[in-house]
Image 1 (cartoon, rainbow, N blue to C red):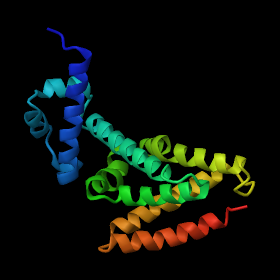
Image 2 (image 1 turned 90 degrees about the vertical axis):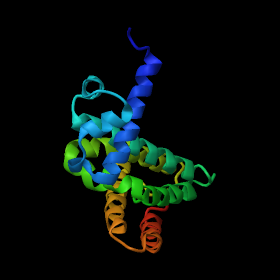
Image 3 (image 1 turned 180 degrees about the horizontal axis):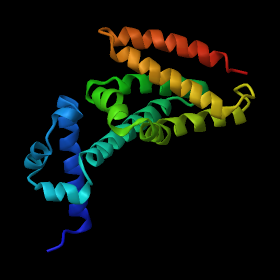
Image 4 (image 1 turned 45 degrees about the vertical axis):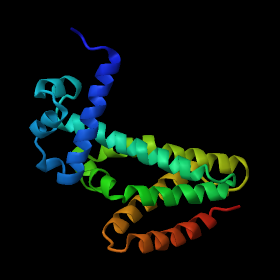
Length: 194
């Protein structure tokens, strides 16, 4: 009997959640798909039906993490009605969420290595850079930001935050290092203020 759409979606989500736990704990190279399907109560064939291979499953996990981080950033930004504070809140939320222990290995270590730079950048653009670009565009339309290229601002700020996240992840005192990074980001952003 064929599964209905809701059951299929539950199966896919279950595989993604279980795989995320395994990728987080052991890393991409150190997990066997047999462990994932066994825990999910499925067969390898079922996994391959939904995901082409291990890399396809990892891509789905990576995308789920990117989406979750993006939602966290948007929620943090929305706490304020002030456009500048929204930008600051969003930047800080990105730094905090990207270095959380359950995101670090997937986003910072295995993501670029497994998916390759091109796919990694596409996912970053889809879930992080587009929201940043929209905020900067809105602020420029409100005459809050100097009339410089929004595209260039987006790439420069995104690059700065991605590099800051790598630096923060290596620190034993992440809270302090996030605070230091935010001082620098606030100063960089002030340079864009009109």
